[in-house]
Structure formats: structure tokens, C-alpha cells
Amino acid sequence: MSAADLSSLRGRHIVLGISGGIAAYKSAVLVRCLVKAGAEVQVIMTPAAREFITPVTLSTLSGHAVITEFFTANTGEWHSHVDLGLWADAFVVAPATACTLAKMATGVADNMLVTSYLATRAKVFVAPAMDLDMMAHPSTTANLDTLRSRGVDIIEPAEGELASHLRGRGRMEEPEAIAAALARHFAAAGSLASRHVMITAGPTRERIDPVRYIGNFSTGKMGYALAAEAARRGARVTLVSGPVSEPVPAGVDVVRVESALEMLDAATRAAAEADICIFSAAVADYRPARPLAQKAKRESADRDITSVELVKNPDIAATLGSARRPGQVMVGFALETDHEAEAATAKLARKHLDMIVLNSLRDPGAGFGTDTNKVTMYFADGRTPVATTLKSKADIAADILTQTISLT
Ligand code: CTP
Image 1 (cartoon, rainbow, N blue to C red):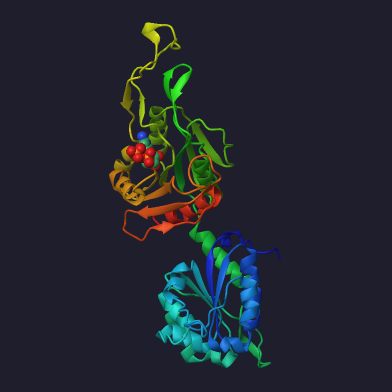
Image 2 (image 1 turned 90 degrees about the horizontal axis):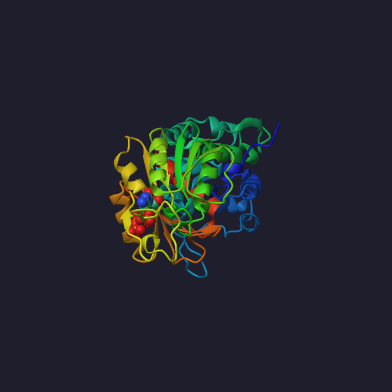
């Protein structure tokens, strides 16, 4: 059997709740599996779980201190179940004992695991592990039904020899299979299969004469990273690109343009068919009113360029944002140097977008030409803004698409 594809776990925040059953020893392998696949894992143990496996093993494997109590005894530091619940992209309880399942189903929040479960908005998985008679008991069945009806995924226990030496159903699913179930969830949730994504990228050049133009420092790296990530997630991608030297990512259709007017034309055409439009181009706001057909000359009064009259370019994002079809998702960028949040949210509304990605030029490592970025995403539906740390533009692209997909 080939190893499961766990690549969708990369960068995910996973809270692993461990309750007190003999299968807790397998949780160490699960942590290892998740961390190896690139996930960040925070372990919460019930007090009983500590009888089966030591927190030291789990904190060493996860790289995070294991949480058991509401407070750290010697320092009085409070562990926020709400913060942990919100941090999680997935919340998995493995092993889930009959007792923990019952507490989850009825909301008995007397330990950190159940309290965090009640506070999380993430997808929840439970991998039950118990003796066969406990597993078959009507109260366990009823609790699992309750959890299932609330959207919890039950990773069904396997048949086999149990700790009691009896044979039957109740053995916790193998760690690799639990990791694979999480990976399948993230892969499906992050998929753009059968979606058409249009992305504008790079600068525009506005001709003054055949050899000179007005432009900007955009390198197109962020837009190209978005195109690569959208294609990797199965989308049909049309990249409307200004002049840049980035290689075109595999599986991406590129439409090359030079000026803002050409970009508007190509983007309008692509947007007619696109489900998602992302405006990452640094479009020149102005163009010369009368570009010269011949090269301007230093010593020629009728063809000098001591001054250039400018006219405003169309706003591509605003034009397509106000002409959007129902269900079409529109994402823009805002590059700001001051009053960042206000400026970004004002642009979000003005351009009729669903989400705006703020780049602050005040952040070192963010903005034009760098391979890294750090952004904050603001939403038209009023949900809490999402801020990233400084990371590669490829990882930022993944974060932007994950948020974008949540709007579709
Ligand atoms: N944008 C666009 N067409 C333009 C100008 C901007 O499509 N003519 C898009 C950008 O791709 C980006 C968003 O609008 O997604 C915001 O771009 P930005 O340059 O930050 O905003 P402007 O509207 O140009 O405002 P200002 O320069 O005054 O900050």
C-alpha cells in the first residue's frame, strides 16, 4: 500500500486532545506523523491520560509544552481554552474514551480538553478507543450519534485484539490512518478543482514615447505565487500579467499585457468566466494623455518631455467589482504606508470586493521584490481580520487562497 498523501497538512494548526486510554501510547506516533507532514501540533491531555503516556514524550515530539491544567501550578499562568480553540484548524481527540465522548456530547467542561473543544470553531475529529462492550453500549452509541449530528467526524475504530485481550470493535484507528483522514479533510476544503481563477499581476507600463514609460517596482512575485498555488489546488488559472521576468508556473494560462488599458481589457474578458478574481497587479494610476509616436528628443521643442500631461487610468478592481456576477468572489490588495487598516477597509468597500489583502510597506520583508511577505486580510462580511506572520510568498499565497475559498 502506498503512503497516504499528507501534503495538505503542511502549515496546519492541529490541537490533539488525548484522553485516558491504553491507546494513548499511539498518540506519540500520531504527533510524529503530523509534525513530519509539516503541521503544528498542540497537545492537550486529560488528567487521566497522563497515567498512560508522559507529557514529556509528547512535548518533545510536538515542540510545544503539553497542556493539562487550566493553570500552570507553580507560575499561575492561565491557559486560554478560547485562544487554543481559535488557533486550531482541526481539533482531533485520539484516543477518545467513552468518558470523554460523553463529556463532549453533553458539554461537561471539567477539563482543558473538553473546554477547548467547546470553544473551537475548527473541524473536530474523534478516534474512539475502548473495550468492545463499552463501544457497543447504547450510551456510547447515542453520544457518538449526537456528536456526528453536530458535524464531528468519527474516525471509526477497527476490529482487533483489545487491551482486555478480547477481540472486537474498539481498537483506535492507526495513527497513519488518522493523519490521512485529517489530510483528506484539508485537501477537500482547500481544493479549487473545477474553479476558474483570474489573477492580475505585475506592474503596468504607460508609454510616454516608444522607449520610455511610467511604471513601478512591482515584480509580480505575489501574483505568480498565487497563480502557482491556485493551479496546484486544481483550478483553471488565467494570469493577466504585466511585464515581469518571473517564470510562468506550471498549468497556468498567461495573457501578457503592457498597459492598464490592455490589462483592463484582458481581465474583463477572463472575469466573464472566472469564479474568483484576484487583483494583485500594481496598476499605474495615471498614463500620459498623449503618448508620442516618435522618440522624444532632448533638443527639439515640439518633442521634448519636460512635462507630461497625465490622465487617470481605469480602476480594474473597482470596474470588475461593481460588475460582478452573483457568487463571483473578488479579492484585492492594498499597499499602504500609513493609516493601513482604515485605508484597506475603505478600498474593500469602494471597490466592491469580498476581501482585501493589506501589505504594509512598514513591515520589513514585506512588499515589492522580496521573497517574503506579511499580510492582514480584511473581509466585507465583517468577520475578524486574519493576520499572517512573515513567511514565503508561496506560503502567503496558500493562506490567501484558503481564506478566499472560505468565501465561495
Ligand atoms: N487596482 C486596479 N486598478 C487600478 C488601481 C488599483 O485593479 N487602476 C487594484 C490593485 O490591483 C489592488 C487594489 O486595486 O488590488 C488596490 O490598489 P492600490 O494601488 O493599493 O489602490 P489605489 O486604488 O490605486 O489607491 P491609492 O494608490 O490611492 O492608495
